[in-house]
Length: 81
Image (cartoon, rainbow, N blue to C red):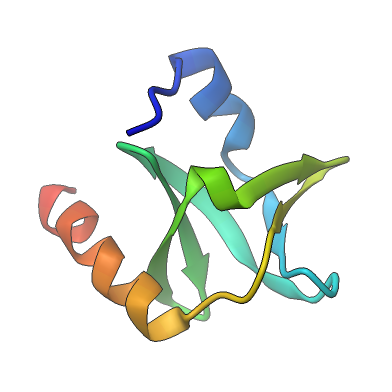
């Protein structure tokens, strides 16, 4: 598990998240353990931080996002908030 400092976590919040092609995928709203929580069209998804790069004002997800799996990964976070 990647440990994220509070300062680093705050720097990832409230930023637009784009996919590898630059298409807007949602907005970052939380960091939970080693996951970035993304709100997309009213639903929540979790993507491992190791697959996320800062790209200017946006966060870019590397590779292909499997949204079904990302939704499953967000379930633990949803139960804790």
